[in-house]
Image 1: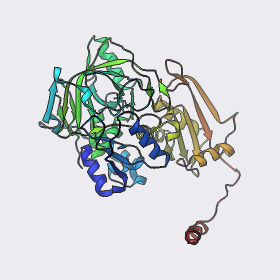
Image 2 (image 1 turned 180 degrees about the vertical axis):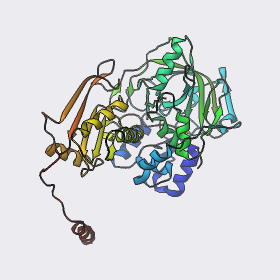
Image 3 (image 1 turned 60 degrees about the vertical axis):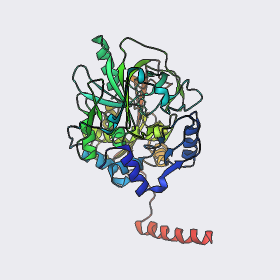
Image 4 (image 1 turned 120 degrees about the vertical axis):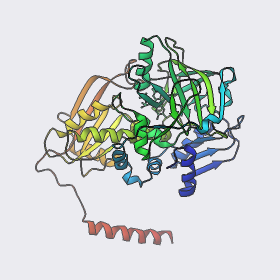
Length: 459
Ligand SMILES: Cc1cc2nc3c(=O)[nH]c(=O)nc-3n(C[C@H](O)[C@H](O)[C@H](O)COP(=O)(O)O)c2cc1C
């Protein structure tokens, strides 16, 4: 399997040409890309967009690479229905990365005073954004304590030719590593990789124990070792097939205003860790592609968070509840806040175990609804129906105050403290009202009849 973004685009062009849209018109870097993407999404379309001509720049822009779950199935090379299972199976067989000496991004290297970030087609997404933002900035860095590498997306605000504001508000590894470096009074060497195969996006969101390598998980998902290559000025290995690499340091003890930014919650967020990234080298492939991710409440941002989290939750809940059917972390909860879990309950208290497990693995989750296995967690109407007929406020709801939440959720305190709610929407064991059902035969016949009626109606 090719590990480059352009390999993935070529696969999409050949296998799903109707999902790749080439935009040849001149497009303004301010707002027009997000405007078009959100309009397409409003109509239920999630194409991969290739913009040839962003006004003022000669580097093409690709967006929508990770805007829909089916992209992850394509990235894994399986049908959508098998994607979650495949992720889980492959993540067991991890591979250490392989270093290659000559990576395509070594072709062009600009160091020190040659660095000029304003030459990149960095987009401005919403009117609230005070500057252009790199939204597909995959930050690679290393724990100064354990030596474990990590990678994760972190928004970067363009502040100057070699200066970026960066926010580490999700308070996961890069945030922790930066604090550890700061304790040692050191800057944190880091590289921003722009333009990656979606397998990297998937693995970057995984909640692994802090000393486990996401690089090895990427290898597992590819089914072969992830290829890495050395940076020019810092001692870091980054995905070898990256389009563009910005190398530098997250400064110790420096904080500067950053934001507000059009966040995935659908709000302008001024909450930020206000870090600063000094760029000391820029490397890129010949004829590079610049990847952007639509900001705001958009599939391009939120789908990857939800998809990967479903895998984490299934694995956590399965340790304590025997019959987990499915897990959905829906876009309506911004891909992080809500989680629906269906189980075949065999003992009272299992829904509560599932709730504890889901909250235990991700501080971002603030509402868990556990339903029976006859409820389709991917159909929110079905989930809400189950609440309407199986939940009782005095016995079904667990409230957990003073928990760690997501700073960008405007309903939390400034420190991101939140109250979590778990809802047991399962029927009590034993006799219960019978859900209405038609037989398989009747439903099969109805499908045929409906197709016939539809054709007649059209005629
Ligand atoms: C498109 C996108 C943008 C993101 N932006 C940020 C961000 O600006 N700051 C942040 O802390 N987390 C952000 N996240 C979440 C982190 O990327 C995610 O928590 C990741 O697992 C963190 O990696 P780390 O554990 O290596 O820090 C973003 C996620 C996505 C999908």
